[in-house]
Image 1 (cartoon, one colour):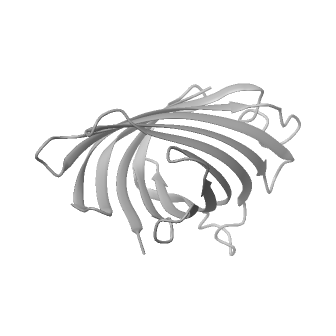
Image 2 (cartoon, rainbow, N blue to C red):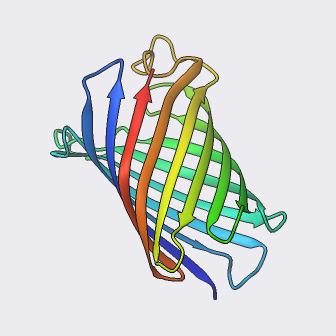
Amino acid sequence: MKKILALSLLLAVSSSTRANDDWGMWFSNTFQTDFGGSKYLAFLELQPRFKNDNSDFSQLIIRPFVGYKVTKELQLWLGYAWQGEYSDKSSVKFDNATHDVIEQLQWIHNVSPELNFQYRFRLEQRFFADADLAHRMRHRFRFQYSIPDSKLFVVAFDELFIYFNSLNSSLREHAVQPGINQNRSYVGVGYKITPHINVDTGLSTAICQ
């Protein structure tokens, strides 16, 4: 069975027009398989996040997906995301979780033996615990360059988040409004431990409207 396991350590620095600058660690652990070369795919991501200059545990995100290879380069995915907001003041530690239904299109192209390009288009139906349903679209462009004669690689991506509707008269009113909600960028370096296990670390910045 062909298995692809990617482990990533991300240092996230966010700047927002709504709050002061903050930084924290995001640990993105992902597993993907095509079941031994079939057209069917499975994917799982576990991502704990920290905030307040990395002093407090803030979120846990779990994203399982199933997918299908339309062509060698084009993939269609259907998934779900559970995003738990952690609070040590409540007996239920994740009492404000968000549930997302996700439809995704992903195009993967090897520009050269060293350079890989990926485009990801994602639609999300976001069910908030403290508000109504929100609809969000995400566009991500990702590049990965493998350094010749080395196990090192450089990775960079930029992702745009766009909401289609507003959640007025709710706790999410300021965060969910039609238009661009966030632009997230990442630049990092990685190491190929084995042909199927990668680890990378880098800097992620998020500009929030």
